[in-house]
Length: 227
Image (cartoon, rainbow, N blue to C red):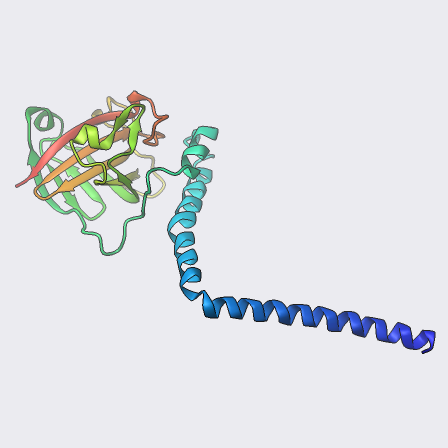
């Protein structure tokens, strides 16, 4: 074989080896899909249920950097941490709606009563919030150091606490300070709906419920019952 023939054959052999390697990889993938379909589906479900919400929380943290509400590295760690098997609200979850009155004098003085309609929460004392879903927290989660939702709300450890972010009533406007937060700006509402009763917790803007959150992050907690 001449030198020219060797030079012509070498690239062809390299291309054939690359093609053979690609076909072998494709065959392996198809084989695994054929015999391990259930495992592949399970892996995708894990990615969808666990990794995707974590990525969403990190994106939310990054979006708050400009406003100064991201809480730096502490906020980033909270966004990527395993926070008690949270889940996003599903489309089939019951939507809290209706009118609720105060259970005790504390709720009567602060809220009067509350009306839940879609994303809006309106209190008889004149305050109202527009909210957007954040996530579902487990009762066992700590909302501040040493205190869990379950302990504060006298609920089971697996109770589902609905967390909603408070957003401006009108686009382009900031969330207004509220007397319910001692004149500070509210940022988050936690709701536990049990039959005819609703427990409501209000957190200051920038606060992310968790073991690192200060006690002052909580503005207050009130109990309401259906009318």
